[in-house]
Image 1 (cartoon, rainbow, N blue to C red):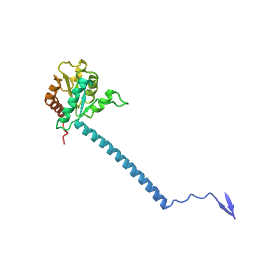
Image 2: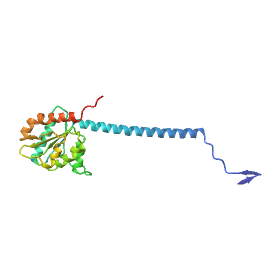
Image 3: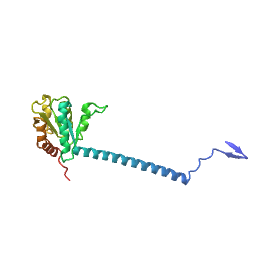
Image 4: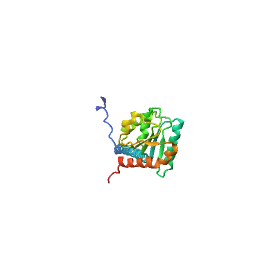
Length: 206
């Protein structure tokens, strides 16, 4: 306490808030609320846009699985070319590139299988394909799988229970050679694949 000329002075009262201060604080709060709403809308928009992109991919992408020796790779390349030559807008995905470093092979294949219209899997001289199908088929029951094999070979026994699933075309398509595969490509691979797509993904009722 300080006295002066008989008068006592205490601590000064807090300064009164002016109308300008209150208006500024209200404006800052309103701006923050608007920014938050905008961020939330942008997040929803990004999620919806991403979902649309995945849906669009699942309408056209066809995953091709098989062995990548020179002989078998030539067959897979034939399948890729045949898909692009059809007037259906297919986008073939031949899994012959490096897998993502943070994922193993099966994880990488599963990612592409999930955004595919259907899958063509050559079981000839199998290596990783049976294991890939054992992961893909249960995980993506609405994605048709069209298995094929060179006629001189027998089906890999471990895959028997997978080949009996509803999403897998039965029986396995057999081809004698590359020329024969070209001749039967439309009637025994594409048409059955599209019938499976229609059965496993019926159109939504509106």
